[in-house]
Amino acid sequence: MRKRLALIAHDGKKAEMVGFVKDHYEALSQMELTATGTTGGYVEQTGLSVDKKLSGPKGGDAQIAAMTAEGLLDGIIFFRDPLGKHPHEPDVQMLMRICDVANIPIATNPATAKLILTGLSI
Image (cartoon, rainbow, N blue to C red; front, side):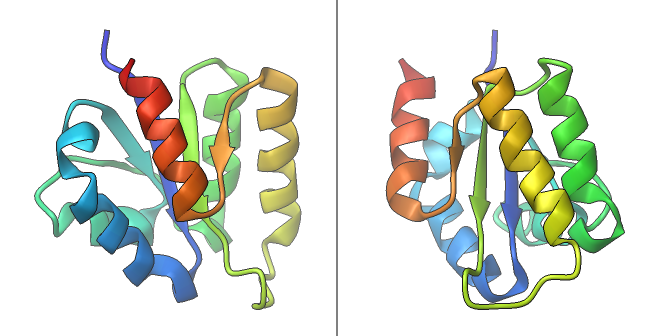
């Protein structure tokens, strides 16, 4: 069964996400990908297929949190901008809390994202 991974990136981290996806294209191409709307659009430009949800501020983070709670994801890569202000921060906190409750790994930077990819590829 293919692993299911969600990809999310704040605006200031979208270029970093695209770079990560390009660097790990082979591993990601073996997974079912879901993403928030805008991030998903960027990821699709690499040639990967992505199930896009709403953009983060419009509820995409909450949609991915619901998928996590329902056991529909094996991991999440969320490149957060720790220095920016985000009006949907409560949704971000909810997502992180649900990952903890559901025991789903969530990476917030490229180093931990690579570890998640390695773990899911085993």
